[in-house]
Length: 348
Image 1 (cartoon, helix red, strand yellow):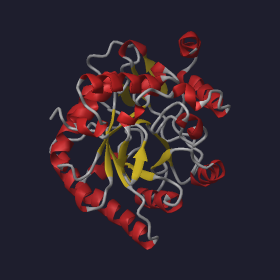
Image 2: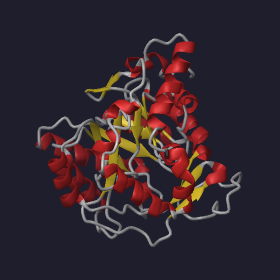
Image 3: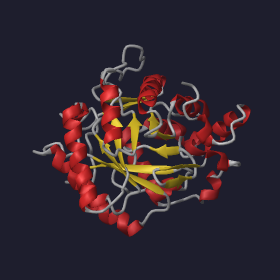
């Protein structure tokens, strides 16, 4: 069905198509059995105190305001991350702000954390409940006077309803956000968040989402800070400001974060470097260019225990998770691997 509808959807402005997809998902049109795959137990993995049915997750940015996450679980995703959620509702940057680079199998976005804000999203999740593992990605408002306090508000409001919370310090579209990659500023933030966890007697996993544009010398610093300060997993990586020189689409110079195929090898390299530094003390969630069983397997063998996609979902449609799982299972069987956990980091 998607292959028939895709030309129509891709004739629309990307954000219009996205809004249409969210509205369609709200109708919950198809039963989850349609997206089941044979031998999925090979993909089961236990992490963050949870049993993931498979490692294929949907990244933050698609369901920003928690409008369709339960329908997304039915498409076969092992987990879904909503957000980025800011304390106060914000509209984001002026349109147009999403660009399809079809010839490059990529997207560029400069959305700017458009979302409904903590209060509305919190009530929405409480009302809807959750039918799978739900992560909540938190960040600061564009005009806030205190970015650290905005992160603290996100944790205080969601620690009791999320399965994990992602600290998004890596979007290229919020001024000053990537400054939190600095060791001193990162430590100050994480210590404050851990105090909130302690005060509220919660063990909610805190995840850190990292930029692909960091200096290689910062990898060791960030890894050590994560290990010493109770970070439960690291998400590698967000979108990139660079890597435009080999693109062929007319939109290649648009300002914003680049995702999709051009990010795949960049994120793989960062995953490998972090995996060596983390020494199995903290798991990695790999993001960037996951659009097939092959690209998923490459990320896993580079050191990722879980995966997320966004651009791959846009291009492959509702069956993306199912197709990737089938392809990944076929690869694992061909390699004689009986459990996905056995494959993590074997390519290092």
